[in-house]
Image (cartoon, rainbow, N blue to C red):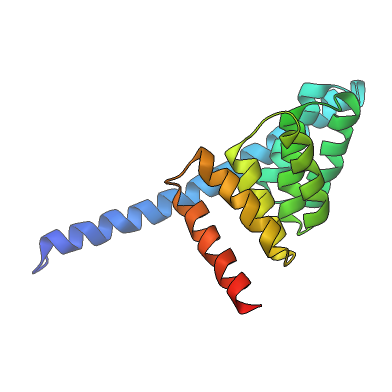
Length: 168
């Protein structure tokens, strides 16, 4: 069918296709995550301490926003490898998603004892902001900005923290 503004019609059609494709991708991801989760159940029945299967299970749970379950799986992983920084960060991220900021900060601190990492510093700062610990939040935000001075999110966070400090 021909439209008066064919170019606009094509863009609208293309945009609609993108939306449909995106919805299909989300559904596909959910089906794959559930399938993966089911496969891992079989492996974990045989070996409940299979680190790789537990890590995949965690990823699937996290992708499906099953954060409470993901946190339990993360704790099992940490029983197997208590000093694994990737798993500690995964736990921190999960706790952050669950709004359990004090425990997330404890995880961030464990990581910061070993290495400076922008994301860890940024989310520790964000957690402190949420807990109304503005001066400490600003300190960690500044540390994050030392690593990535041009980061828009960190610069925005810094402005928000300064605003909150000024409001006191």
